[in-house]
Image (tube, rainbow, N blue to C red; front, side, top):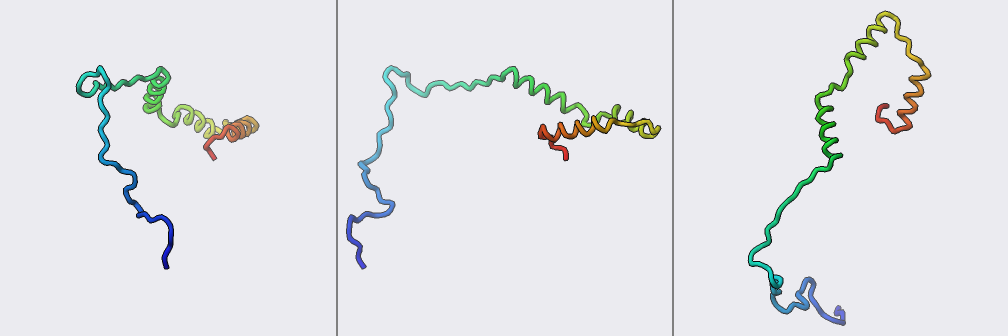
Length: 101
């Protein structure tokens, strides 16, 4: 079977006219590459975040003073949390997208 029409090769080199010339330097430029300098600036808010992260790194995740106080109240049968306040807090946290189940 023979298919008629233009013939060409896949991946052929069409429209090439030789090697491309490298771009010439701009008029009035000095010889050699231009000096490149890197600059790094940190905004005040980024500095604040860095300081906050440093403080959090040394702050314990558990507030042992509060845990001990509640534990002592529970042992003395004196811990009676406000059920409505706890429920409101749970609902508020859930609606705010809290990650605690």
